[in-house]
Image 1 (cartoon, rainbow, N blue to C red):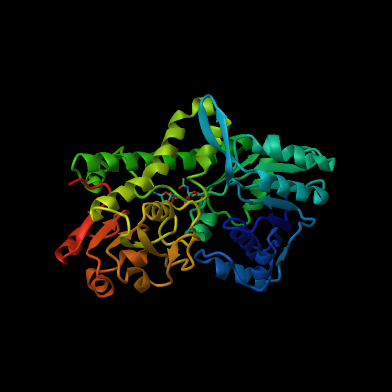
Image 2 (cartoon, rainbow, N blue to C red):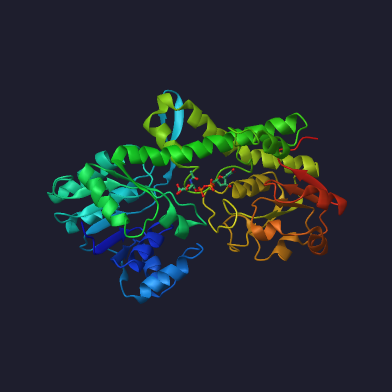
Length: 433
Ligand code: SAJ
């Protein structure tokens, strides 16, 4: 099977790296997005997201003339759908006494609809967006069949989840194992033929629903394990133990690997995807449901730590360092650091926030463009994201920039001893007195 032309629908964190990588490997790629500003930016030769190595790959693909952009799809040998599947804002489901967040599948639905007029015999359509189990067969297939063509007979249809780690996308896209779930074995084989253009990792062929479950199982495993680490941090604080020391010792056991506690779980993946299981089967997902709750509550434990460190929150001046959902990315979606800042503000604290990767920050908070501006006049400094640049701060530097003597480290970024011997009062999440 030979694919010469490709249409990638959705040019975000996954779609743009994927479109660029395919074009750089010789395919003629049309990148599609409904946002005219994104199309305009890309046509100008610029990129709208920060991801190491993306700009270079994008620009070299652009120079070949094989990568173009439009607001509408066009005819192609293959189509990839890489649009977001967030949860429905403000719309909860309920079953068996459990309230759950529901996946917003509108972008997938309209991307599938937009392909229909261009679908031809022999085409391949791949859904990459993280989706509830059975989306490919129950949602996407019937939409595409409105073309009059039958999936599995006239065209191929597959689900292939993206599994790349933000910050490492360009490398992991190529090196990671890739799962291709076809609605028929022939569809899976067609998917393999397409991705073989750049994937160097193992390509595993299976059915579409298995591939959907694999993706959700990976992220749910991580979410549940982080919830466990967060619960351990609460226990350690209560029993006068340093959770970080306890974790490092427990992890010496050959079959134990404990993840890191922190202010909670953010991003558009791990804090969202487990809900797709809960939504699809609320009667049999109590562990997954409760783990989500543990992680969602975690910002409150950081706030309590800050309250204990300062004695009170009302009117207190706090410098909050970091807003991204994890270290060294510019992505603020579902960020637990942001939740900490909002909670502190609700308690009456006067918080100045500095996010080195996104100085504009978020609405309804006082985001300042420099570290200096955040630290000036502060009474306490809290470290909310373990960005390399923030972790590298030393007592000597901080002393020059702030009168604050109280430090709260929610991410185990700073060496407490150094700060204490420099005269700071140091508090770390998960450390009991
Ligand atoms: N976190 C902790 N403790 C840890 C590890 C992470 O609190 O020990 C927090 C992070 O700070 C962050 C959140 O969890 O707020 C998620 O970060 P992450 O690095 O675990 O994952 P993501 O969301 O950036 O990317 C995940 C990856 N999935 C897995 O590792 C199983 C990635 O491979 C997926 O492609 C991505 O989700 C996705 O798009 O689904």
